[in-house]
Image (tube, one colour):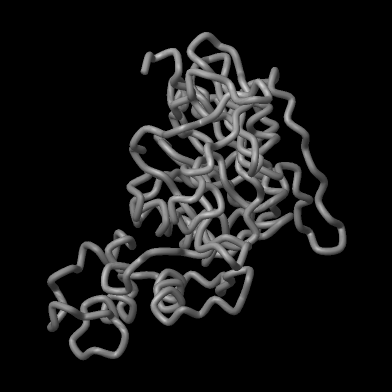
Length: 320
């Protein structure tokens, strides 16, 4: 097939897909039935960021049809809220993910952050943490922010503290994302749409309000959508994620997706140590001695024991 029949998925609404063609035209497409019924345990076999191949001919309604998609460089998934499916693909072919974090209005819990980082590690997607709304923090909040950023930076993650409404705070991001395909993720209300609008005012994404009763964001994005940037590249705005369920990870390798635990591979007494109750475990010793943060190990235990009862995936704020 010619290159002209390949396009990039900008938006998926479940049944219909908006595909950007090399000509700059955006066309509405549906998926051919066979592609949709290949036994994939996912709510969406095609996601934003996918490069898809279209049938040269339109269907009987004059619509274009997606018949295949190119092999992905990577993708990131989470558990679907649809109990009949196993997972939901958030985005594909992601050069870098940016996780928006807020300490207040709403509060982002460590377990949510860690679960997202584990998923990104498992799909080899570099992730940067962006701590937004720092202008709303009091002195105590700023001390918390400093400690939390120190924790994640010591593990190896890049962190930035910003106010998305301050242009100087986000200039670094304009330069980083130029000509790349990046994803913005986080809870509703953390400022994802505000940030995207600030990066490219022509997009004019709808911005939600914070619920006064629960300090939680109101969903403004129903489906993930990818926006071409005037400066070059694409930015994927994802729906606000309330909880982040991990899928398809064997327990034997979960520790490999915690960089600080990965460094200790081979240091335990038993080569198949799962860092739970085994003697002479280097990971547990590191937790005891402060080399691994307790909050991170708490998340690891949740993933290993399958403790998904708390939909918010919470853990304590303490930085022991």
